[in-house]
Length: 369
Picture 1 (cartoon, one colour):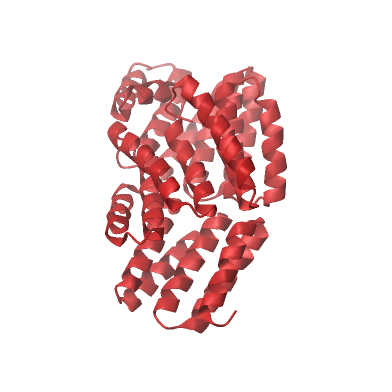
Picture 2 (picture 1 turned 60 degrees about the horizontal axis):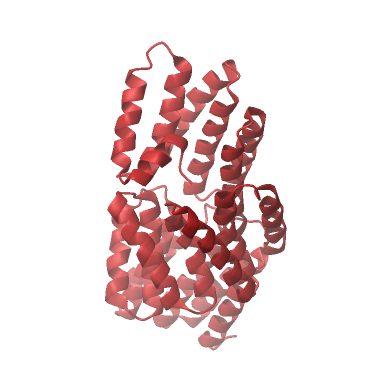
């Protein structure tokens, strides 16, 4: 799910090559505003995935300037790409509803441009938004079904949208359906041999975690992490490392979990709230396990405050449960209970039955059920 030119170079192995080629294209585009604007948009996609993570502020500035040019020349595909970049910016910052709206605008321009390949990729992104943001699970399932019907002609788009579709099924506890969808996606991608498999681990691993299988989640995330590290990709790597830390913590492997917390911390840009919040939650629990209760509570509270700026309901709930665990370990059961109850409300708002049940079991652990 990378940009047009960037994707081809990314699959070759290194994002730095894509950035260099796009810089040359910009330098050679003197007098051709459309070509320069197109190249600058694609370069921002590449930079957001590369070393240092790029800058969402810079990317948004590029979007605003490019849209003026694309609108002036009625460049439908250019407008599509610009709206996709804006969507990615919102996604990185945890504003899933805004990102989905931007992808909706991008999809309309793709339809006007007659670019089915671009349209299908956008629809796959919209499927990815379904389990992550504020859309209730029942509605998210319906949306994914509609998207699947629309992208049937593209095996790649189908494979991209199936793991998020699986995740919303898993949230309802329907793990047979979830694993069937994941298997279908893997079969398609195995035939295509595409790089997209690494990002899909972000949906496949949570399915296994909801099912209580952290070792299976670890296998998926380690494979993705190694591939991303090899390619020099940083945006996905930061989140992958944070998720790995979480599944290792779930297996009581604290030293390894702490190492991946640090890896995520090193790779994540400040605006990448999913990574920033996840590694903090794990780090806080590790600190609490070692008796550093004051520092642990501060780190966990920081995660809660960071993610509160987003509409990532599940991530917000998870951060509150992490805080609850930290407070419980510190011998503060009443405060722990309050944090877990707040997390439970978010899971229920989303319709995530499995996480809600987990939260209720945590309430029982405080003795205040």
